[in-house]
Image 1 (cartoon, helix red, strand yellow):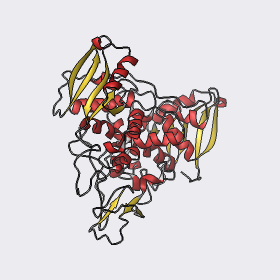
Image 2 (cartoon, one colour):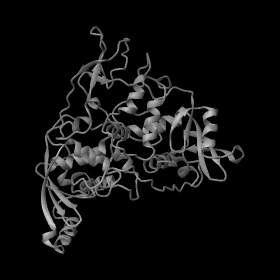
Image 3 (cartoon, one colour):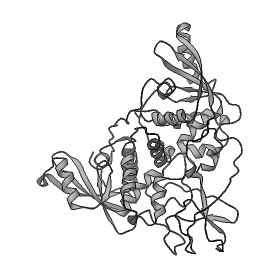
Image 4 (cartoon, helix red, strand yellow):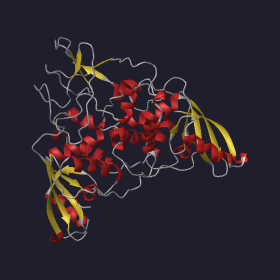
Length: 439
């Protein structure tokens, strides 16, 4: 975040309403915008907090805060908590070549055993310094690992592209560009002004955060028309039918208000909470791939832009995959994850990454982040705590729901419900459980 270099943009500004119509840019700025799709949700929330930007991404902020507050004793290892609060991106090595990489240094560090006599072969390396080697020593000795991915990141060579105010990226000669210039032709030339703008890493980060809440982030940030606002609550209805989905393997007990027809809270085991917490490690592009409706902001336009951009402008099919079908880094997933997200494989010469979820004397861990068996309470807005009858009564009192008005309903989470919960947690800040299981 200390890089003070700048990127120069040419913008066409409508002087009448003080709005950016579009900007023209080379690959540096476009690649930075596209890189947003590879960043995990947990990292976006952490970056927003570090810059005091009040952006609420559905219920995701509640999940992040729940991980922070939950005692480390609930996690299989100390590193499990770090995995959720400071997740890695599979594209980390590629993003190092960006002119503006908004991910901080913490997400690109590697460590090895502090015991100089450790003879593990191949050499074990760790994402986090709190992981213990099989010999018992902490893996807190930082090492430099470089992965050669070339000079280009996502966009080829000297490509110059057009970016609309709502972050639609277009190549010259496309129908979308023609629409823009037809509009220009009908405007008074005196109302249009060409402006050169120099932006830095702070503006880039603010563009990312503003794209969750605004349809005009270029205008809002570069012309400073408005401040950021919390993300708008989108009404979400999941057409589920029977709640017993195919391949259901998690049961959840819902405490439901009969009169209000809402979920007051849920009681669930560590398997369900592992699943909810895993939303924080998911790349933004993976989540946007599941969205089929218009959002309050325009961050989804970046995803559609990569889909629509001619392949000749992208460096490779691999880059396309990093953005549109991103996978998790090695060791970040666990067996039978309901969303079926893939896990990438890194190859380092004579070295391998240890699983941060492994406890002492474990070589492989197919389980999630939490110890089990354990029971948790989950509110409708996905705030998670250890189970507590007193807290349950407090929630009912706060909602003004008498004991006589509640019913207990057991539901099952299969693939369909899992994707429904992911989408609901991204777009709704208060009723994720209700929207999926009661709508």
